[in-house]
Length: 201
Ligand SMILES: [Zn+2]
Image 1 (cartoon, helix red, strand yellow):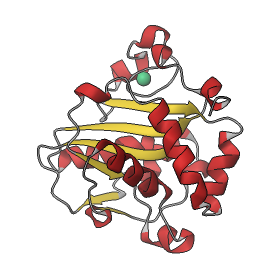
Image 2: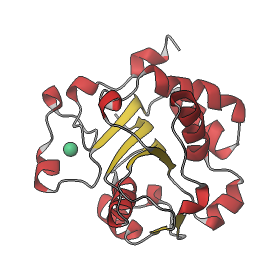
Image 3: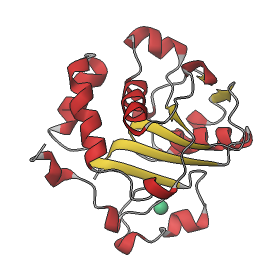
Image 4: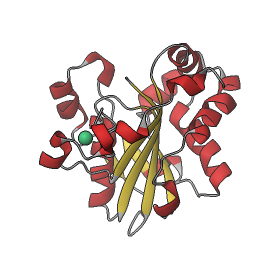
């Protein structure tokens, strides 16, 4: 934990709506031109070793012993806006049914449940948000990522007038998180915040 404190994100110099570098944490030019659907996006850690290996073991080898330390890393560096955000419920980034069957579990749901229990928030049931199967985002360019996720989510649960906190493991371009936030807002959500474990430095 002490070593990993060195790779915490620099919230004081990150854009509050996309997490990219931005001096003094002002909303970056790109977010000013195209305001994202998320009110705020925050990552606790940079996606660098040894977290890369930890997350790989957690996610692809299903090493659930890593859940408590990974969730503890998030809680050790929470979003600065958390106290005034008035979160009503937590939403885990869903996997498609095919990906869930292949992996056997949803790593973001594990993190979401751990955080929800700690902070006393309810979790939206996993079936509340459905995700269609598409090629993994990690294989695509920034442009392709936006196209690849368009219309991928279907909101089944009731999210009207709720302030939602979206939990994911890694945010890269933010395309997936923003697509889900847009879908939730179209279904009546008041605001969508996002908190992820990591983002690339
Ligand atoms: Zn930005």
